[in-house]
Image 1 (tube, rainbow, N blue to C red):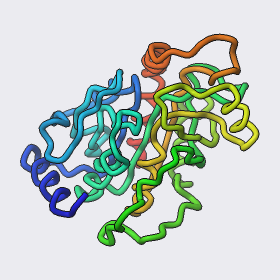
Image 2 (image 1 turned 90 degrees about the horizontal axis):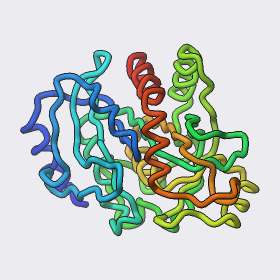
Image 3 (image 1 turned 90 degrees about the vertical axis):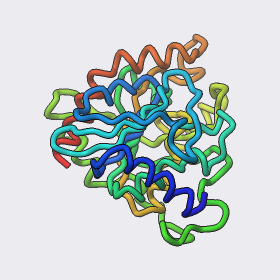
Image 4 (image 1 turned 180 degrees about the vertical axis):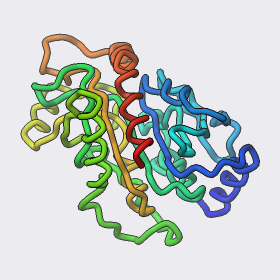
Length: 271
């Protein structure tokens, strides 16, 4: 990534809309329908934005959506990029840099995950309080972009405490319990083994997935406030005596979509 590339992408997006986004939102597997609720929307397919890559994962539409919700201007990624697709960490997190350059100060990350905590059920929503990076790579490796942040950014509070309190308050008002826990990221695309899940249960993880952590690290590097909510679509490998499938993940995320959308709308409305 170069500053020239960032400038070219930002210039292209600004040529498509005069709206100035203040909130960024990354929509994970099966959760892209939330962007349909935006008003005055402008759609930018990833393949048309300079220096963007293309999302190939099932359930990821692959476009930017800029529009209004609850009086706020939001930039949504309707689908994200994953390490397992063969992209570099730089490519995966490039959209976060673009959001920052466009003026976004608050980033909401969403994903579909497998529940490690045996008390979890499919359809639960989990507020991410912290993460474990088990991807074997950090997106900040390489030359530091001083314009975005320090060489050695603090990661003691990646997920903003005030935003987490707000999310819990909104969930309570809407009549459901928002789970909380630590999210561990694997590279994928294979699902985890039962032995790996048992290891991370011992280390205190509550849910597992194949995304989110790279974006959270880069957002923290940029000084953005981060909130992350995970949709538990299934219990992880070995907890139930049945195989896991990608179709199951997307179907469960779709079923939880209305609850997820209501939560996000409530959060945005109170920011």
